[in-house]
Image: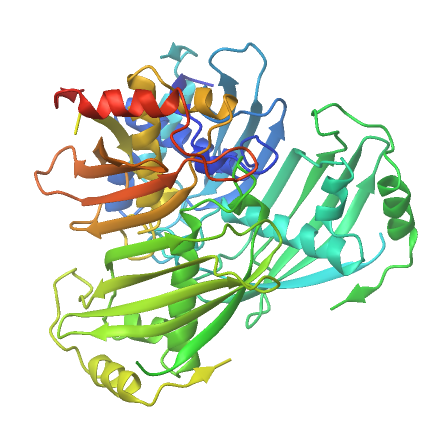
Length: 143
Length: 143
Length: 143
Length: 143
C-alpha cells in the first residue's frame, strides 16, 4: 500500500543485553523511528500533527524476531502503511541488517487517532485525507 | 494453564513520553519482569537456566494497549504460561493499574529454547520437564 | 542533611549490556527512582509538585561507578538532600547490592526549580519551605 | 587533545518524557554513541578492542544540562579525548542542537581498561599506544 520508506539505524551498546544481542524491546523503538521518518519523508512530519492536535497512541504492536541484531551493526527499517480505518492507522516494518541478507525482524503497529485529551477522533482532517492519498498511491520504494 | 504470578511495578518518570503516558515500548520490558518473577516464584530463576546453558531469546511478541499507564502509578503484571512446544515457550501477560479497574494492556511473547551459541534446542532438560509440570498443574493464582 | 530514604530495585534483563553488567546509563534512571521515593516517603510526592506547576529538570548529574550490578540482583538506593539553594535542589545517592557489601555506585544530581514554561523560579512555595524544613531535620535513616 | 569527532543524532519519541523534553538519562547513551563514532572514525572501532579482550566499563560520568533537546530535533555530539592515564581513558562531549546555537549539554566520562574477566589492565597494547598517539596529534575537527 503506497510508498515504502527506508531509514537506517545503528545498534547502540546500551541496546544490547547480556545475551550479546539487541534487547527485544528495542524493536518497538526502531519501529517508531521508522514511522517518524515515513511521515517526514512524505512531507508530513509527526511533530506537525501533534501541533494540530492529532496524537497517535499505539493500540496494538506485533514483532516477529528472526535473526538478532548486534552491537554496532547498521540496519535498514522499511516502513509502509498496512491499513487505514476511520479511527486508526497501521504501519508495517521490516528490519534488515545492512551487511547480511537475512531479515532481522518484521512487525506492525496500529495507532488510534486521538485528540490532546485522549479522546478518539473519527477521520481527523487534514491528516486522514493525507493518509488515504498516500496509501492509495502506487507502491514505490523511497530510499 | 497452570499458575498465574503477579508482580508489581511502578511507572518511572523516564518511562513516560511527551504524550504524558508510559511509552509503548516499555510494556515489553514489563512483560520481561513478569516472566522473570514467574520463574523465580516457582523456584526456577531464569539466572539458573542461563547458567545451565539454556537461553530464551524472543521469537514473537504481541501487545494490545487498552488504557495508558501514567507516571508513578503502580501496576500489576499477571503472568502465566500460554503454550509449551518442543522448541519454545509462550507466556501471557495482563497489566492492570492498581487503583483503576480497567486493564492497561495485555499480550504474549514466545521464546525459543537456545544454547549459548544461539542454536535451537529440542526439549532441553531439566527445563522442559519443569515447564510441562508447571503448565499442567491446576490453575491457581499466586500473589 | 536530613533523612536518608532507601528504595529497593531489581536489575532488569533489558538493563544489562553485552559486557554482562548493568548499562552505565541506567544509574541516572535509578537515581530518579530514588528521589521519587524520597519525596513520596516524606509525604510530598513529585506528582503533587508538578500539579502545582513546579518542575525539576536536571541541570547536573554525576556518577561514580564502583562495582557493577548484574541481572536480577536487588540493590538499595539511599537518597538524601545534598544542598538547597534559592533556585535548585541537589540530591545524593548511594547504590548498594543487597547481597554484597561493596558499594555499586554513588553520585548526585542537581535540579532547577522551573515553571511549566521552563522559566526558572526563585524559592517556589510551598515546595521551597518544605525542602528547607526537611533538610534541616536531624539526620535519620528511614527504611 | 587531538581530534574532535562529530556525530549526528535525532531525538526519538521514546527519549522524551512528560516534561516534553529529552529525558536526562539519555545523554549518557548519546555520549556512548559519540565515543563509538570517535573510535570508528579514527579506524579503531570499539568492537575490535572487545574482540582483543579490552573492555572499557565506565568509572565516572558527569553531565551539565544547559538547554533541553526536544523530539525530532537533530543534535551534534562532538567527542574528544580528555585524558589518558595508565589505567583509564576519559572522553569529553558537547551536544548542540543543529538548528539552535545554544549548547544543549556537555560532559565527560572516564573508563577503566579491563580484561574480559573485569580485572584492571595497565597500558593494554596496542590500544594504549593508539590512544596516546591520537591524543598527541594536533587538534583538528573531523566532521
